Length: 541
Image (cartoon, rainbow, N blue to C red; front, top):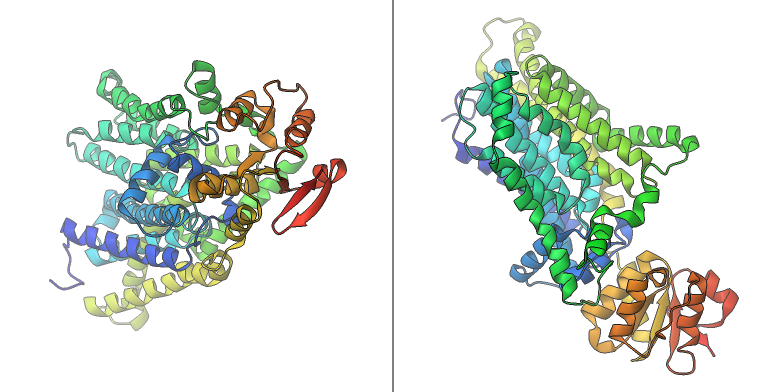
């Protein structure tokens, strides 16, 4: 069959294009992959996640059980490199799959718009593939595809849920039975919330929309009465049972001890971070809104934004419910990201950029169709052949590829290329190498602490070095865990005041074993005499 034929509907071709789009993304990510733990691209939490995953432990709230279990499973079948490298490859694979589902979602959306669905099959496939490749090299997704973090997996849940929802909606539009797809999507959503809870914010408007299809009260009530959907959702959420089960085994990393009700709620609710939720000062709101605008522009450049808006407008004409629910999800996530007072909250916007990518594919197809219709007028010949139109459309899609993903790749490659980044690796390896067996490294700042946890608990446990987190000493559960692991490192009685706990942790060990400090050493310099020792400082008696 000619590539420019009319009814190219073989699903095998769709999955072949899916594989090509995902492979392009995977090659980009593999070339720029971090070789191990990294502090770049806000990857400082990687050491905490790695330590929890490879010691069957509990990381910082909300625990991320889906990610931990997925990473352990992947690492078992991909036995190349150390644990951090495998985790980075895991992120690359997840992100590559997510852009493949962006391609499929854009494809399904085009098929739901009557005048787009009538287009030649190759133009539909090319436009959807363009969307996938553009999302693949969008800056924020790319930044998370090369490090150890949970956002690549969240992106996969977002894109696959959008794709599944559009398949379900297509069945509704065609009057076909839903089958078990709604149940499967509910299960997928539950498991996805075991990775990142912001998925609920983005998905909520889509869920409401999916129950309102048809506007018939009896149909809506029928969907609400179907017990299988909430049961599947709860079954997906059951992934959180990992937390109490793992915690009961007393792992070396056991944030909050979620094997009891109070600890479990502390973990899942993220109460430790509640002060950050809507914690941005009102004077900063406008600056953060402007920052989001700059961020959106940086993902796809001006051309991509225009195409996304065109696609949204085209879909609005026939499927307003999808557009409204999508915009609502985008607004909710964006508002949450703006109000969440952390440096990495803008990463919550990756689902927003992915949905924009889906619309961008629709906009690209609308442009190709407009170009095809304009060819006869441009050449002044009414009877211009299909192949002549197709050649002009091929040229148009090539221009789009250069203007959006091509521009993004060129603009972001140097900044996102982590293939030579060894700063975190050298710090962790150097610190453990410098410290004698049996020594204690008291470390301030989450980023260096997590790196030392990974190095001491996962990579070099035989070194016998205890990385003690200064910030975690405020928690009774952490003090008790350290005493359980090394009873002679901390006294049984805990001082009430936080700074006194740090002083006791150091003074209790001085003269007994080597004590080092790392990270931000301002507090330590005021209290003790320090001697530089490579990546760390030795506390002198």
